[in-house]
Length: 317
Image 1: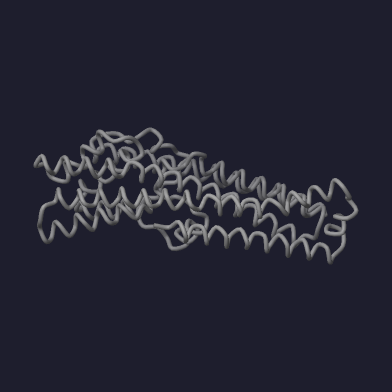
Image 2 (image 1 turned 90 degrees about the vertical axis):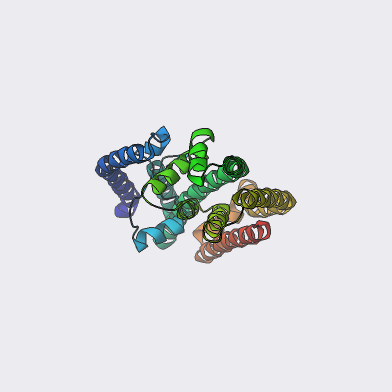
């Protein structure tokens, strides 16, 4: 029993010490990367791009790191996407997981407590990173029509695409400005404009940048009027954004219904616990009740995931 109660505290201590050690060891690498960005691009990045608390991976990423980042929705190489420092997210998730383990250990068995702690940790960490990444992508999408229009104006004035990207890095607001500073860095290291934009798409997950990269690549190889082609792309992007906003508005009722259906069982359980505590005690003290409660929690989580998948599929462009 004592070992089971001390296990969450030991886990929290190990995670905290590990993140502190990782931050100390990565400080020099981050400083060297900041100097490289400043020398190559000719200007320093935004101060938040150089924060040591941000996750920024240089070079080739291992398959295990990519799988872990995909599972937890970690925005690698996007320091500006983090509202909360990633170390704080992991520590907070571990702390809440320890609290969930302790509560479940008092009410149920150890196996159920471990499952509850793991579920709480994954849901909190993945949900936080997903919200941050979605906010960052939405900011880039809102600025994308103006970004493309700036490229159109520059090309109509007779300037090359590289100068248009330089103007974006100078004139646009963050986070587009900081991302195009990194695009300039890639171009200064020898990447063509279309490959630099494709790297921007892979880094941020914004599909419109991939379309932009393909447009520039096809025009560079086959020729044609670049300004008219990019102008058509800008109009297409505006239409895509308008359709996406309309789809989200139409899905608002479905989202509200999904939230109500997910919250209703919790409210009903709390209400029954207050009105008749003996009626709910069987779910925590009887083995059959514990199995029923575990089955209900698992099916509720699966229902939430399925509703989110349906809504996301219906509102996807």
